[in-house]
Amino acid sequence: MAISGIGSKDSHILSNEVLNQQNLFRSFDKNKDRALDQNEFNEFTKTLGFSGHDLFKSIDKNQDGKISFNEFSKSMPEIKAEVFKKIDIDRNGKLDSKEIESFAKLYHLDPKKLSALFKADKDGNVGLEEFIKNFGEVLENPATFTDAPAESSTKSKKSKIDPETLKRIKTQLNEQRLQSQGSILANILPSQPANKIDFFW
Image (cartoon, rainbow, N blue to C red; front, side, top):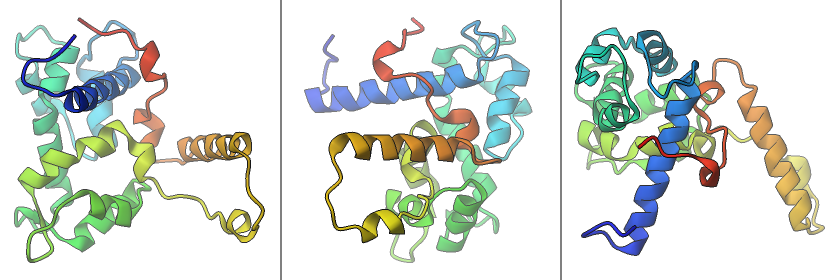
């Protein structure tokens, strides 16, 4: 179904964003009731380094004690803002390269990939608005930003790798990333192909 005012390319991006958010939501919906209770939401925010107790109340708009997918999706800016405050160690409202690097190391993310995601100001800092605009890519596709294991042995060989072998290597690397203890991936890496996701509405 076409979305008014959005081109085909933008519609595709929007569709992927929603599907990725659904995967994220499902991974914390432990009892599979298509809603997050206080404990489930707390587990989600815990992986991001902050308590979600107070935030839960503001997101649960109809005050039914649960967060629906619609409420969850609409709350993404608030969630990202809380992550920003967690990273902003000196509380100056901006993230410098050291703060971003510290956050990346904590969650086994690649500092260079993470920094490249944001457009820094003239002083090399990232503001809240820029962070909120782009951090969703990390939440929804964490594997894209993880530290890659050393592949020197593979790169040193000059023989070409056939597509099937390359696919198998990538699968193994993704499995290794999922096993990293304390990694944000352990909880929020999408577990199902996008084309098999059922919409919540």
